[in-house]
Length: 315
Image (tube, rainbow, N blue to C red; front, side, top):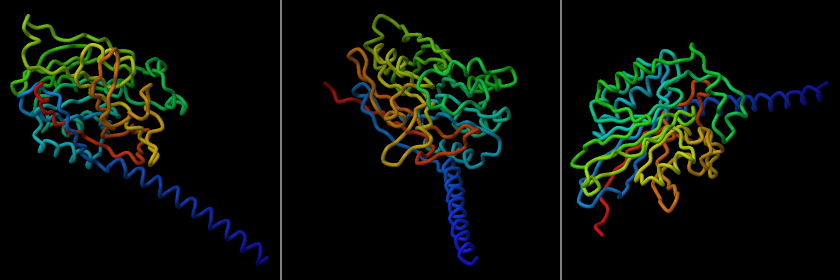
């Protein structure tokens, strides 16, 4: 009896230790959703002689009520004094997330801004089969599953953005004067929902190409075909989100998935994309939030990105 009890004790101890490790890992992964950081990048892509521009790139905030730590972090980003705020979508994750979102973004809406939406701007997330997330193709079923009761208050969100002066780049192209530079913006609505339509680039005067300018392309989801179109058309910088940086990353390996057909090695950070003889820097944000249905991050800190754009060396 003593031997049996000792054996059971060891098994129980191992089971208890395993459970403790699992609980601890889950707790650490959940805490990881609040381990906010600002990633800083520098790119020499402006026309020669232009002053530096500071671009704050936000994505995938996935706001739900009660996220006080995220709210404080986002509001304090206004202290960076960016020249431009770029929001690449998936701002919401709950029917009641709109007020917390607008409160968090309020200080940043004092600065010029542009935005494109993601699927979780339009619709609340719903449970889906695990292997659907692991797929690399556009999730057609996501569009079919959305119902009226899933729709979020994106119209109010877009209206508040517009009242603050932020411009919607969904399937649109326009020019924005910024610090002596003409910023040509072209964006697409969410490719994950098959809403993307490339609007080309703004057409100005006959001498427009001679004036100092920069072509900025925006998309929520960085699918290959979207990046190909932007790159081949002459974009000089592409900003995107959607991937959450993989959200669950393996140390020393990186992301296991990108939630689209983007190579996992580009699931977060500043990389480059080539198409038809053109090469363009692409910044993919790991995002500041996570779906409320999967509120975890492992080895993938939630981030805002401050891009400092500097002039190229004169030829």
